[in-house]
Length: 260
Image 1 (cartoon, rainbow, N blue to C red):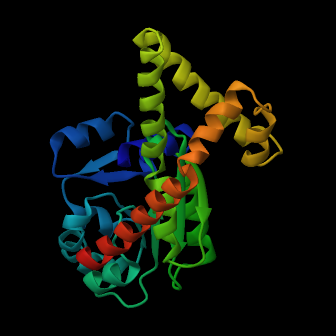
Image 2: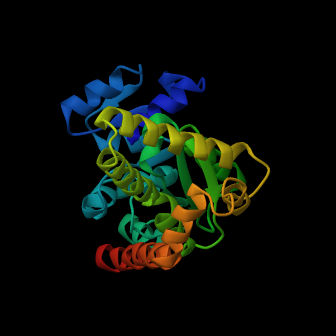
């Protein structure tokens, strides 16, 4: 994800010289260096010279990473941007031991790797208007970036868009499988499925109508699409979606309790 953000920023004209990255992995540093950015092996050195610090580490090591740069955070007071799931602003503030540290939490998703991501952002009360713009520009480099008013709403963001790509992959997986069962070759079934998903998403994005209207527009009475939709609804498709997203949101809340 960090490499995607670097690539997106550079593609939008941000000078690589203004970006620095640190990592213990030489391979990761080499990959970042291909963009022309500064590379470091010390988190402390990076934070000491940064106005915006993006934390792109696993939630399980976040406490150690933040505590390791606490002195530099206290001296510099940069904007801290976290893309780790389940790590609250209060936890980041506690680990940093820096009162008033401006923090933005983000929940991106994997299509950010193709600069087609969807990210929800939440800003703590200490984030200035200028810093909000910086955080938004950072995540907008890899797709759509939208603010939520309450930190708890990031659990809903996680359920809808953070985990969302997997829901579509699951549907596509079974569409391809059944297409093969109905006589299509694997390659044809896959390409038809992927292109249909892409086309439907483009229509939803570009059309003035909501998705319910788009669905109704292609569902002729007693036609093939009508038969499929009726089968979905007879098997409580709407309830399955509600249960799945609610489960994701509950797990997001539980993760925050486990990791915080």
